[in-house]
Length: 507
Image 1 (tube, one colour):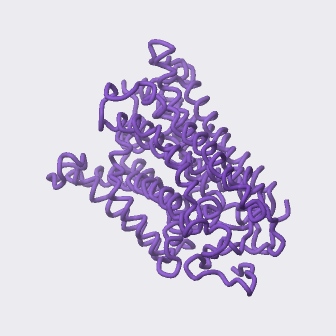
Image 2: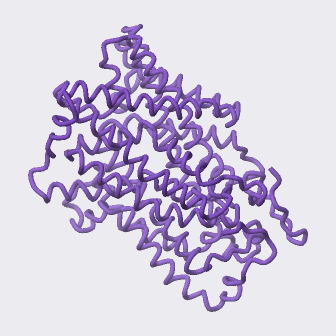
């Protein structure tokens, strides 16, 4: 890829650029509307999406409450997705470089690392799902693997058999990183054909086993009162927003290849809310059917498939789940964090090295615990990290649209002494606004993970955690605008100088 050349008088600083971080040339911006729609359809069709919907049923919602919650959450997160995507489409820059505008050329490493560590968590979750699918298959043919002696501490909640297959699948993911991302293209094609087929097969099974959609959809909600429903709804909605909060930040990694703004806006609008909701509907129906068939709700499709009678059917299904999970993992959970880690030291950390770092952190996060139950999946994982990413998104959007008026000076994004250097490369106002947005959610998070009890702090402060992404987004955005207004007058000429010496994308 031939990136556009920065002016000779201002060669990019060695520690701030690489082939992966340089702006994409106009000639290389080839993604159209359907490319973005296909990207989102492919990423939406994954096991965590299914589990997202089924966890709401397990938590007490009926089918239409779960579907509405998912649709609302994805419609809300589409807004920052499109807004942040605009900068990538206009200037051809990835997320770590875009973050330099508001956080500084050195300070951008802070939001980049926060986003990267969360991607490592998703890498671990996807790897656990794939490994557990293989375990379900092996257990059918080698039953003894389920009774291997325990080798891990009881506090880890990790059985030896699943751990072995998890490690095996983890090694397979790392090997693909070693081969390079191009090696995953055929698996992505396989996933695009297989997963919709498998989802429809599960839907057919649910309708048949549940004696039609009527009995399945007639299952009522479990809430005893409207107060109980709202207490579950708001953190669930926040969790739905949090599900794609990672991509709402690093969407410039993809929109930098857009032919036009229309391509990324329309493509994302078509590809995100509706496909997510349709696939989630399958998860809702199947999970509801498991209660009718087995007397309990089984929210994990891998566990459900393991209950089928045919060894051959289960084996084929589990291998297919593992392969499609492998494809999703590399595409969605390796590319972005690898770039984020590379941004730390472009001269020393390559894409492969960043991928290896992602893999190691993905194990250390204990992913099997994150998805062990619906409450942990939603309240601890999804809502918890949304409290970190919401403030970052608020700062970046407030800066780009209200401070910069969508005008950036690209050469300075690759300089230690340009207008985005601030104080030694850090914008202290952005960091202060980031802390101000995260702080109100900390008490609620500590209660959610059991670190402290609700009685030790103010109930209303703990309650803010139910709206973690929204609270962080708006507090950080507002704080940033107020803080930056103090410095805006002195730096007005620099902040508003339009880009005249660099290629930008047509709108």
